[in-house]
Length: 497
Image (cartoon, rainbow, N blue to C red; front, side):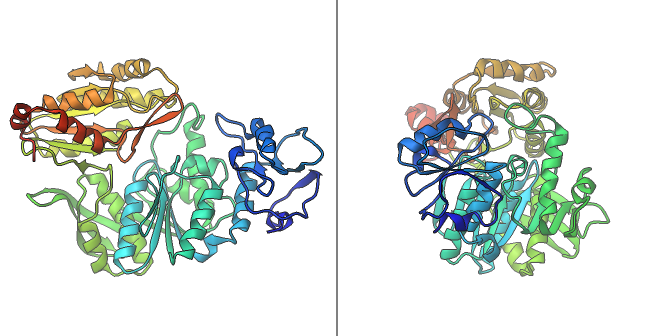
């Protein structure tokens, strides 16, 4: 493709060089640049791509995109954009021939529920006989393909590339989790989504490397609904009207409110020998009863949003019912079957609100004890740490404080912050900084009837420390711990063979 052709949708200035040249691709990672692969220098929260221009040129790169003045050899073409990140989105969309126009794209945003709702919608579409891809927190999925991603919403270049690959493989629908950070960075400013879902909003993602305050977080979330054809809003959220403000999309609502288009009439937790989940009844545009194989009242909202989208897509209600009854989502109250005496569940809950939702649900089943194993992420809100400590102290019989993803912070200081909240309660706690050792302690000291909740990492299969992601899949870790137990310990703990 000619370089000039991919610039058709972006305002640019040719500082030096020639744009009448052929290229094979573009790259925002300097290590992937070459003589026919221009380098786009992005400014991130921690890294500035402009610092890697010399590295790209050393690999033979003959063209660079910048947003600030640079000095390079005259043989290198320099194209200046007002914002290289927005520019990357527009250039990538052109490079991959506008793939969003060939897919029905369903975007989901909100503080909680994005991943579960996305997985539910994908399953319903596929059970209806159609093909669907997913891009989100757990990675990229379609058919038998899976790709790891670093963020909930990958860079625009990667998303458009995945879209084109999906289309080439016969995919018709795409469900995307859209993070507030990606909206803040305007990765999708040139895309019109077919459907957009607002799940809820609470204090989160405010702090270092995220949003400076809640108003900024809220505003960035709202941007999605200014670029969609159909918007679906949780009417029970106090921020629903804010999200609907100044939008031109068709609007539908879901929730308990009598004004909801898709209304939740009732919901109850069901714990049976072969089914753990909820039973819910809906009215409005869909009047029926549904069983969902994920416990918790918060699950009803995720399911209701999925039902609404499926209905708007004109999918069969009977298919929706069957899909939800056997839906599973990795790292969302995911049971790891190791014992016939106690249960161990993995969940992604990492904030006070999410943790309270999970613990209140588990409390209803009246276990002998609730044991939590959790930490908090580094370089994130300190308030989140206080909240999780206080919530666990309130609900759990024993809280085991450990590491999550400390990132660039000292984990001992993170635990000190968690203790600020914990000490507001009478909760019993134990500090075991090594996460594997903490999980091992919870298993080796389990009592019959316990429910152990390993919280915070959910679907993740790594632990991030000082910029390095080390392998850490809690399903694998738990199996390793079980294998390390001696025969007497296994018998005492009722370990399943």
